[in-house]
Length: 117
Image (cartoon, rainbow, N blue to C red; front, side, top):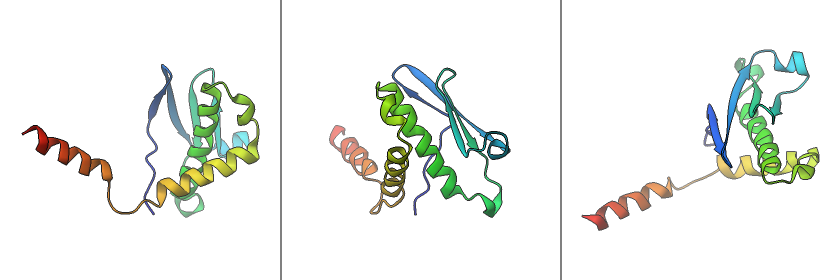
């Protein structure tokens, strides 16, 4: 399984969202993740050993990312459907983490470099 990159921040439609990790998000908010659209921030529960594995953090990140994307494209109504968000983000996680055969963009970059010479 390929680890998913969870960036410190990312841009979408001229907005920069920041990702913050918290040790007590589950206790304080009864949630593993939370998106704050006004402040452009995704809050995630910090990993604490085997009790909260990286796989779960990745899954929660993609769940919150789906909320962000739908909100930013003007489809917040879809983002309110938690069953849809959960199915979509789980499918997205499976696709991103199950890639095989190397990184194809490296092949394209190498080929483009050879053509320029």
